[in-house]
Length: 238
Ligand SMILES: [Zn+2]
Image (tube, rainbow, N blue to C red):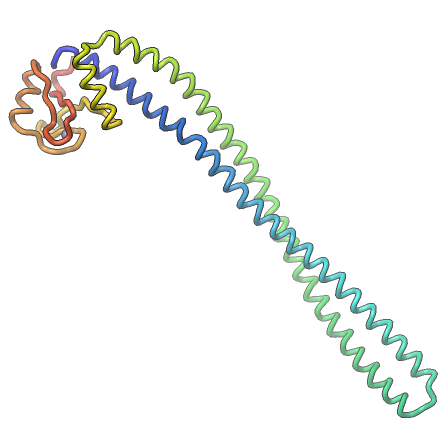
């Protein structure tokens, strides 16, 4: 293997680890936003169900009021009927009493239907409440995970940067600058082994015979003609 390359492979390993950590750290705020958004969705649904339950309760009170109004009306008609001596008035009141009675029984039907809807709504609300509670717990756990990850990565980052600086100081300057340029453009491994004795393991394209021979020789740097990565013969690593 070309002199200094195995040293750069160690540096590359640390650099790739650094890149991975930086990516994870950059993704953390988005992860937290996702957690918050999911929880908010759950809470919104719960609030909707609560509003629905409140509306049903208001409807129930309204119906109660209607029923008691009709009931008073009915009482009044009955009293009037008892007091009247006129036949036609008596008949008219009988009609009113019957009509009001029908209206009351309609209201009672609606009250029954409403009661069923209220029971269903209460069950739904109860189930949703349990979901919200578990979502809150889960969100808290996931947030803690993200925070733990950030803390661990931040610690790793400091050590890693130090290690990278030391490895850079000990690297061959020309080779290092070429490697740095490649890494900056690929943001991925740029010193890669030849796979299957024929291909660049970075871009998976076949290498020319000349490149393979150069890599096997181990005296000069060999580069993939397709992607520009530095390739080496895997057996040559020490
Ligand atoms: Zn390649």
